[in-house]
Length: 224
Image (cartoon, rainbow, N blue to C red):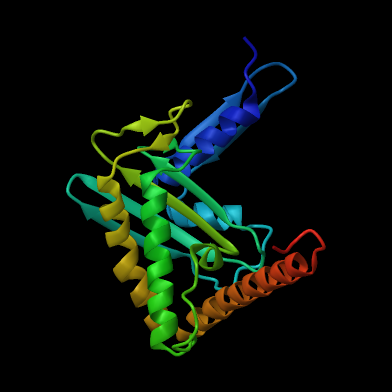
């Protein structure tokens, strides 16, 4: 059996990020391949986000951290926007990497979109005639870690990496709604930078849609 050091290293690093303060040491003692690394992250998933964004330029220095609980389910989320156009969301349930997402990601996306729409309208970034920002708009350039802990995790999908527990939606919503709204109110400069990026994404999306519609109308194949 041939072990791949980097595969094990990646998994152990995830565990160290997900369990703040836990020290994990991985060592390879095979002749000619000797290497070792000790990992301990007091900042937990905050440092996970910083590590993912290490080659990107963040829009705000501080990683936004949120935590909440509902019933037996707990959730913690860390997020930071950067100047890229890509969305990076990594989710876990009981420290298991949920590659296919699931209900915890659904709860996060819904709460994130709602909070940004409410903030943008309250502070006149959106006019009354403007349409709401979409989830795609508010997640452009976002790096987020969503980690939930629950007693009876139910996984779906062929690879069993999609969380199906509906109750975690409430835990994630509780974690995001109040904490993110408070962060935006307490950090107006950072909030302005994020919301302006989100609105640019929405404007670009509307322009792209109009351009597609224009091309379709001009197509010789279109018509009655």
